[in-house]
Length: 474
Image 1: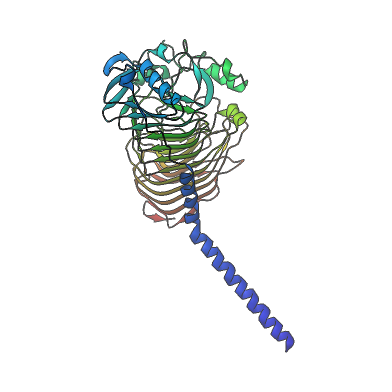
Image 2: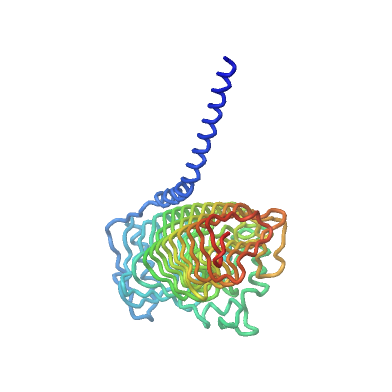
C-alpha cells in the first residue's frame, strides 16, 4: 500500500512537471516576437536626442551670396568654425541657391537648411583637395574630400527642409565608374584602371598604412556625399540628397546615429542611400529612398581590411521607410568581412518595377564574415524584380571572388510580410556546402506572383509558419 502511494505521487509529480514545462515553452513562443522587437526599442532609446545652444550663425553674416554662382566655401567654413568655437549652436543656410565646395562639420554644430535652401556642390574637382582620410568601397584611403564630412567629431547634426545637390551627372564624377550609360567614353580614365581600384586592392592585401594610400588628383575614385568618420552622436533629419557622386550617407566607425525623415533621390552609379559601416546603434526612420543602387546597405569592411579592423556593424533599426528604385531595400554586404548582427526592419513599404529585391544578404569567400539575427516584420512589398529574400554567398561582380573565408549566415526571420509581385523568385538562397545557411523562418508571410517559389541551395530547411506562396500553403 505504501509503495502504491509513492508511485501515485511520483506519477503526479512527473505529469505536473511536463505540464509546467509545456506552458513555459508556449509562453516563450508567444513572447519571442515581443522580446525581439523590445530589443529594437531599447536600441532606439539608447540614441539620445541631440541638444545645441540657442545661438544662430547665419552664413549670410559671414559673406555668403545666394546667387548659385559665387563660391561660398569660406563663408560656410567661417560660420561653422565660429559656431564650434563659441560652444555650439545652429549654422543657418537660408532659402536660396548657394554654391560651395566641401563642407567640414564640427562638434556641437547643427547645420540647418531652411525650406528653399539649395546647396550646390561645385563641379571643380580641385575644390575637394587636399585629400582626407576617407574610404572607397569599404577600404580606407586618402582621397577627395566627401562633399559633407566630419572626422572624429561628436554631437552634430544636419537638419532642415532644404536640398543638398551634389551636381554629379554624366559629365561630372559619374563617368569615372566606367559605364557608358553614365557618360564614360572609351579610352577615358576610369576606376578599374590599374592605378585606381587594383592599386587600392593591393594596398588592402598588403596592409599598407592608410597615410600611404594616396589617391585624389590623377585618380578616378569618386568622393562620398555625406560621411561622418569615427564620430558619435550624429543626426541627419529632414533634408534631401540628390545627384550624388557615389554612396550618399556613409557613417563609418560611428556610434549613436539617427537618420530621420531624409529623402534620397539619386540615380547615379553606386548611389546607395545609407551605408552604415563598422557602426553601432543606428536608427533609420521615416525616410524615402529612390536610388541607383541599394537603398540601405549595411557594411563592415572589405576582405583583409575588414578582418583587421574587426568592428562588426550591429544594433541597427530600420523602420517606417519607403523604398522605391534600387538594387535592394535593406541589404547586408557585400563588404561585410567584420560581420553584421542584430538588424531590425519593421513597418516599411517597398515597391517599384525597378526594385530588385526586398531583403538581401550578399558575400563570398573573399569577404567571408557573418550575418546573424536579422528580424523583418510588418513589411508591404508591391513589386520587386528578382526576389523577396535573397541570400547569396557566391556574390561577385568582378573576377576572382573565391577565397578561404567561408561566410556564416544564420537567424534570418521574416514575419507579417505581404508581397503582390515577387518577380523571378519568392525566396532565393545560395549557401555554401561547408557552412549552410541556418535558421531561416517565414511566419505569416503571403507572397504572390513568383515565377519560381523557392530556389534554395545549401541551407537548412526553411521553417514556414502560416506562409503561402502563389496561393500554396508551405
